Image (cartoon, rainbow, N blue to C red; front, side):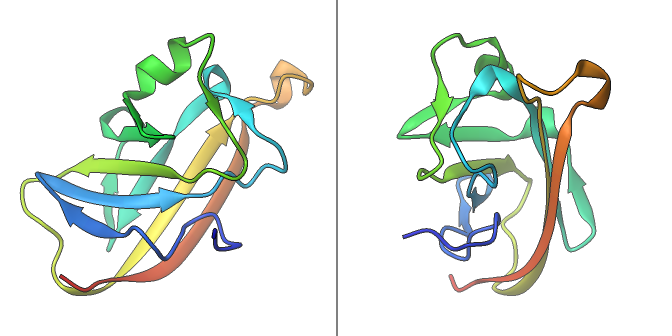
Length: 128
C-alpha cells in the first residue's frame, strides 16, 4: 500500500554504498519514463543531483539516462520508484529531513510551460 505523499515512509534505508528512498508518482496516471527530467533529493541539507540517482521500477534497475532514452519503460501510478543514492557512508540511525523535487514533461502541455515540478519535504527515520 502506498502513502498519499510523494515521499514514502516505507523503504527509507541504508543500502550498499548509499541509501534508498521510495517515491510515489504524484501524477494521477502513469507516465512513459522518457518524459522524466529527473528527481533531485536533499537529505539533511546535503543535495544529490538527478543524474547521480539510480532508479528501480517494477524490479528493474535504471540510470536516469536509460529511463529518458527508453521507448518502452513506464512508471505506473500504483508502483513506487525506489531511488538509490550513492554516498560514501551510510546515513545515521534516526530522523532525517528528506526533500524531493520531481520534474516531468507532460505530453499535452506546451513546451514553454514545461517541466511540471512536484516538491515535497518529509521527516523520515532510519532504524538500522
